[in-house]
Image (cartoon, rainbow, N blue to C red; front, side, top):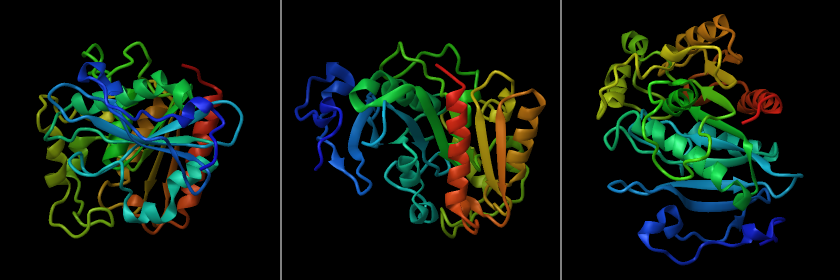
Length: 319
């Protein structure tokens, strides 16, 4: 294993502490070196609320480059009731978007969050905000830049990502996790084909089969209700489109025209509404692409355009 440029980053936490220490009670190993020369920290606990399972993230940090690294928080999809930080959909896995992010100089934090049967909104949203604060609070430890934090999600993760930057209904609700003095708003957002208007999605005629979930009978009318478990929020409350306004972080939206799981009209309408109020938003529509970019001419080009937007946005924003 090569020596990290930041000596403090060579140390893991090898012994458990008392549970009263919160996330510091959980050990983790020293980082291993990945194929791109990055440091890979596995199984970092970012939140451990009493009565719930500890929540983990896996962090990959480039060793090359000057200064601290901007960080992308990756929010996986799965219909709000399945998935894992350890898994990419098969087509995304084949195209290695996280490797491309690392090669562009970004650290990547893949996070787990509680599902709809474990907690409803705002609990799911609180988890992503807790991860954002924890990474900022531990930025020096992992050579991260707390002023350049991007939240990037796909499918249901795209919906959660949008809610993390747009939703105001959760304002004032007690925070979970740690580093409570840290900001929890991202500096930029990337939404890949996430639902934006759940009431409209319920009315849409979309099928259940996809490259991500496989063959199944369930469609949007069966999947969307998962998000309303354990919450009194309405579908309007749960829709990013309900919170459109100008003063939001920069947003990049990308969607495939042939998406049969989340219709492209979801993103078209959201982007039109954001542009109408003067928000900083850019949009990429990919002809021929299905859910998880199946059929897209080049996933690498989609990642590159997404990164170009956030890199420019981070140059012009501050915490």
